[in-house]
Image (cartoon, rainbow, N blue to C red):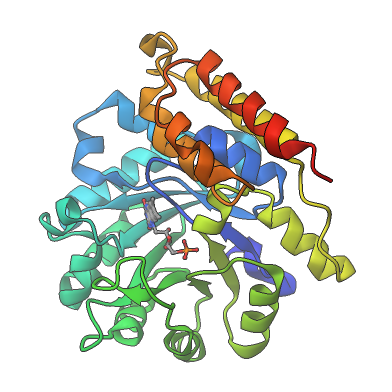
Length: 329
Ligand SMILES: Cc1cc2nc3c(=O)[nH]c(=O)nc-3n(C[C@H](O)[C@H](O)[C@H](O)COP(=O)(O)O)c2cc1C
């Protein structure tokens, strides 16, 4: 059994989110209590082509362990090669296989959630990766199925377990659903009852009450939090504090939240490949919008965030926002 599930622990994972859960963002989540984290997904073939930018995507610090590196692809051999390269270089605590991504560019490669339509291939890929890295645990992340008429989580979960996966994360939506609608927790619960390996439930978890309910009502061994952590990495702290003391701690002030966003931006810009951008923050605008989501007045600053070029611009938006909303008690 993976160590983070042992002795009744109930780990909270930070969900992998491409373009958002980078190495610096993960630092903040870890400080706030995320138990297990997974890198954004990388394409197996691209890793074997030695693209240095991809190696930056899968980089992590020792403090972030236990860390998984997530890969996607449809070719068992190249997935096995990628897993070997990653374990040789980075020694992650586990390799995670993505069988859930609904993006067209991934589906076109017959990878991600496309694999849910091809359970045989899904089994071959899992088996090849498990055999390629005998010293490193392999886990799998899926959706419930392709669409409502093809819910395959149970079948696919059994296959993954049979091929040696050591945990299964289920995002409780179908490929067709994308990120809309409710997560299908009854299906997640069924799979968790069915399998011997730990099942990690995922989909729309936003507060401690969700965690308590799911823990009570299902056999999930842990939970994974995605979008709710994007603008609010404190969610891990809040949930853990609530589980321990029965109350939610004071939220960070708007000024503290901005301090974190600006610190995050500075640290990101100091990372490899970013320093060459000469402080140009335009590529980070979607991140700023995600990071401020849920803050009071955040809708009103969306326009100005969409015009940020340099750190001074970001600081100006922050000061104006704090002046308007940050002093309200
Ligand atoms: C912007 C974004 C990027 C994502 N990238 C990945 C990814 O790289 N790998 C993956 O397995 N899931 C990815 N996901 C899915 C999340 O890990 C998670 O399964 C999903 O957001 C549902 O959880 P939530 O309702 O808590 O957000 C992504 C989701 C979002 C919103």
